[in-house]
Length: 413
Image 1 (cartoon, one colour):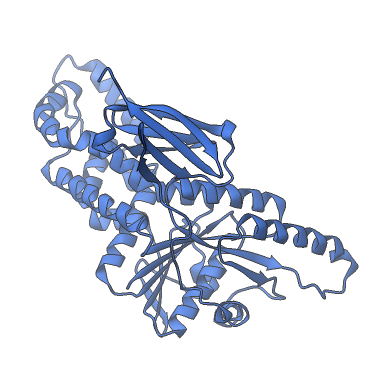
Image 2 (cartoon, helix red, strand yellow; image 1 turned 180 degrees about the horizontal axis):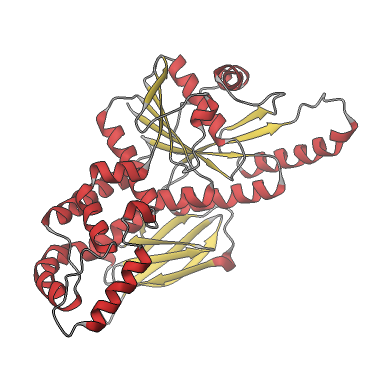
């Protein structure tokens, strides 16, 4: 069975080297392995001391490496969307006016000066596009069945959360808008062109959007399939990193991802024999203890701080020999429960696991079709089953790291 392993954590904790070590171990085990990076600041090529191109490249038996270029993916696999956006943003999508259109001409001149008459490629990626097309590429590679294991080196925590929650967020909007999208385009296209001087997407672009929507739905199922995808968090024994690791774990559970491993990286050797490091050794011991207490239900792996830069196959293989060969690091399972709806005597109850959340930071809203949970800077829309559309939130409790939300029949419905 194919598996996806996603490595995330605060910037600078060593995610790439640990992901690379897992890829070496997997290839060594005889599994067809792809090590891929979704971080725009790619460094897999630096680790393996190879100059990588736009496609996956073989570096060792059973091991390919791929640094995703989302703009390349977008232009080669969703060309009609790109053509439409290029036309729209460069001003070519606005038709010329006849006489008396001075105000419109001025607006077009302003837009032309903003875009410099250039294309979307010259302007750079639109917000959110990098996450979207990186994820779509992961799903495509998974469906190709070319590899037994996909090992994904992600960007730091915040960008990883943006990456992983993107399919659910965009699918939610597209479910609301797409059913009327094609009809709207047919109705509005002539009006838009005549009145606003803006071209609506053509049929090919709409087909690309529909194709992308279907892929997003598949992708959402894939990322949340606990038999297929797991998330591993890399940390170091320092206060700020440990606190971010707790928040990262909470956010992953909020969005229902399966976290099944914690990696404590850069642990100083106890026998270092240098007065300068005595205080650091004590600090690290305290935070290692705290990590083990906080994440006791998860497998925890301890990785030493090496006496050399982890660059090149030989250096990365040290992690394999010192840590990974002593454990079944590719055994994954559902460690925490998924969100679940439970029928009660008076209605229904929804349980959401939110480890390390603070009661004061949790907000709850209900719309006609969704329940919205917000904690800190993150928000999730949970679609309500049809049976609960006539129910209202009656109350909620946060206890034992679980948010329990109670629904009762709306008598006015």
